Structure formats: structure tokens, C-alpha cells
Length: 262
Ligand code: ADP
Image 1 (cartoon, rainbow, N blue to C red):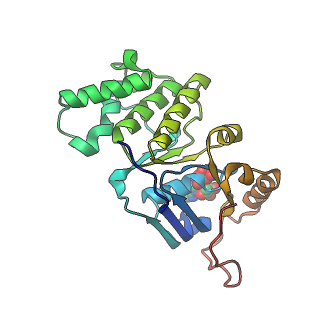
Image 2: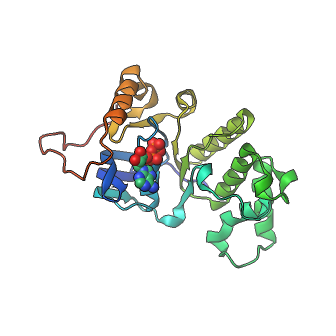
Image 3: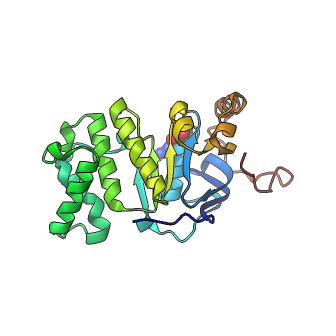
């Protein structure tokens, strides 16, 4: 699929607050993600990066404000959670795990036709896993399993791709291969958002960055966002955040206006 890049927003966060059990985890987020953007989401541990991705997936409903996906429905979104959230004890082969990427197209209970099998084989070849097709996923290294998950994303053919720490516990060669795949998706005009902790990777490959620390610290071109001052501010904000705070409205005087990119 080749998508043409548009300038209208794919995702709009308007004064968005997300959280758990009525306790905000990220609050008052005003950001727009443009269609075709390759955006890194960075911030200290506990900053709310995963929470934001779960909000886009619809796993969390806004506690305040709104989150709008323009012209996108669930079928257009592919989501890669963190590896630790995925149960690998399920006895399934690499081939069958990758084939799950076609479920939305063909349904879970219909067998794969020849074309589907060819698509799976091509995806396995793209991520360099042809030789491991019949191996159980439980017997793979962290890097090999991440390649399986990327092959599955490939088959989902989604216009919005959300990646939560895709390079954690992954070897250097695999990281390089998966970054190449992400850049390829970007070149095709897909919108890609990735929560990442390695700032060198972000600086090298991601044109735009959203730095969060329970709230937006900075947002825009990566080199303007990842400054020592912004990173220090992010650390302070996360350390100072009150875990037990209840939802609160933002002061009317305090920047109701939309934040512009850095
Ligand atoms: P990050 O991905 O930046 O490390 P998270 O979005 O995982 O941050 O977490 C932000 C905060 O949200 C955490 O510090 C925690 O307080 C809270 N949180 C995350 N997941 C849950 C959950 N399932 N239940 C309750 N609170 C959670």
C-alpha cells in the first residue's frame, strides 16, 4: 500500500487527560500528529508514554479533553505493545504467529489460501526469519521474537503504526534491520509513533519528537526538543508528580491556547 502524505492531522489530542481509576497519568495534552509523521515519544520512566499509546488504541477512555483520530478506525491501526506484555508461552509457530497479521483481512477461523501463505512467507523473508518459520515462538531470542512481531505488523498493512519500546531487549543487528523497516513505512506515507528511551536513536532517525513528563514538555523538530534544559525539566516533572492526584481542571488563565510545536 502506498499512501500519499497529507498535512491534515491524523491524531488530535485536545486538553487530553488519561489515567487509571480516575487518577491522571498524563494530563492536559494538546498535540496534533500529522498524517505521514514519524514521531518519537520520549520521557523518563513513568512519564506516560505507554499510557498515551493505549489512549490512541482506545484501551483507555479520556478522563478529560478529547482524542480524535481523523478518518481512521481500529482496522487502520497496528499496535506493538512492550514485549513483557505479550504471553509467549502459547504454543504457536513463527509462521502462524505472523499469519495472525492477516486476521483482520481474512478472519481468524478461515484457513490461509495460497496467496495468504505467500504473503506470510514474504513478510518472514523481509525480517530474515524464513529458516525459523516452524519454530515455536517460545523458543526465540528477544530479537528474533521482535522480528516476528514486525513481520505481523507488515501484514496488517496499517496506515497508523504504534510501537511501544520496540528495541528493548533486542540485539544491535535486529535494531538496525527494524529501524530500516520503520523508515520504509515512513517513506510509504504511513504515520508511525514510537515510544523510545534511546535518545541517540531518536536523534538519528526521528524527524519529530514529543517529550512528555505526565504533561507535554516540548514537541516539534527533534533537535529543538531534545535539549539539555528540556530533558532536565522532564526529569523534574516526573519526580514531582503526585501519583494520587485526582482529576483537576486546568486554570483558565494557564495556557488554554493550543501549544505550538517547538
Ligand atoms: P512510561 O511508558 O512513560 O514508562 P506509563 O504510561 O507506563 O509510563 O505509566 C505512567 C504512569 O501511569 C505510571 O507511573 C503509573 O503510575 C501509571 N500506570 C501505568 N499503567 C497503569 C495501570 N495499569 N494501572 C494503574 N496505573 C498505571
